[in-house]
Amino acid sequence: MAVPPTPSKNELRRTMRQARAAYVAGLGANRARLEAALADVLAAHLGPGNVAAYRALGGEIDVGLDRVLAFPRVTDGALVFHRCGIADCAPGFAGIAEPPATAPVVAPDIILVPLVAVDARGNRLGQGAGQYDRTLAALRARRKVLAVGVAWDVQLVDALPVDPWDAPLDALATPSGWRDFAGR
Image (cartoon, rainbow, N blue to C red; front, side, top):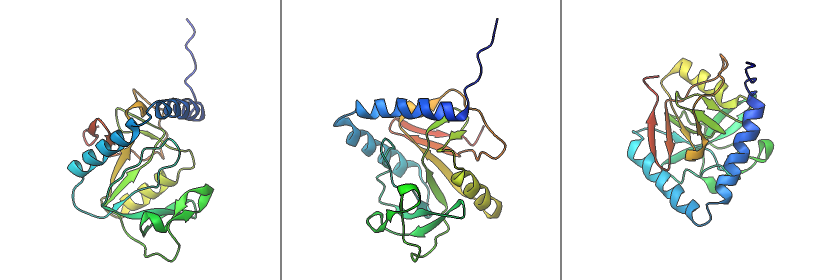
């Protein structure tokens, strides 16, 4: 029997973006309730430290957490986190909201990481540019940094293809709960 080919990461991204868009389109007023549930999950599980997050775009889930201290700015293909309120961010790299370059740089202890899909072992499928992978590898080479994927439950899949440069997540937060990947 012929074995079907494993989909490429780009094919998986396309499929998962479509699934996420359909899911979010069907949420209606429930979106705000689920994002509030996610904020509760994060508040219950995040320990002390500087928290960096992203500004949600389109179908991405909004972390809605008051503790967010910093946001990323794309610099030379990686991310640099700057102390900034979300209202101070403006469209930057690829139209993504970024802090001003003049905002103070912050070394985050916890990074809330966006994703397209995540598997049961903490492997993340991102947008494909590798900024989070490079950034996490560089930060982890210097000190402990907790990488928490943040997603809708529909973004959790059984398994994803993994490349050697892919930086795994330490945990995943969704509206339905917390998954710890420390024992992967």
